[in-house]
Length: 191
Image 1 (tube, one colour):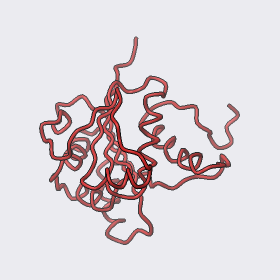
Image 2: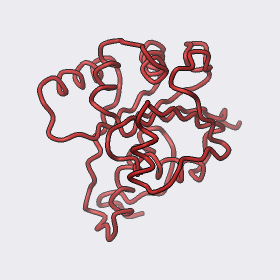
Image 3: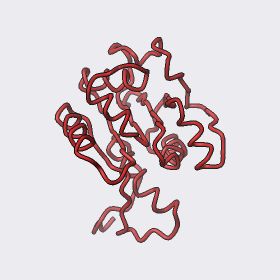
């Protein structure tokens, strides 16, 4: 029996760290049993930050479909959608706070609210340092409601040699949390 093709959402916000989102979009279509659809939403200034940090424009290539952040007619604005996972990467503290407080004032916050209310997977990748108490309380609220908080904190035990290698330590962790197989380095694994 084959597993159903998954549909996921990637929200890119205005936090620094567009390279994490770019690498996710490069790798997700290549994982074992890749998603059938990757819906992408950019916050208002995320595309400008993407362009500045990656020195490239975003281009949606199948299976990626881009949705406007004001489009409440997007399928995943409703709990009847077939999307099973949402990744917010990088996550600004502004969107993290709006999601934690149920302020569904744009498609990113609404889609995250849908994931939480439907008990689906919501992975939030905050890219901020240091955290203040408000940030930590919002993360606590989200963790208590079922979200996975995965800060963009690279690991070093795989001995990364380049910036891309370092970025991939976070990206591979996010992909694993989303339930996809990647063949990543695992600490003290004999495989």
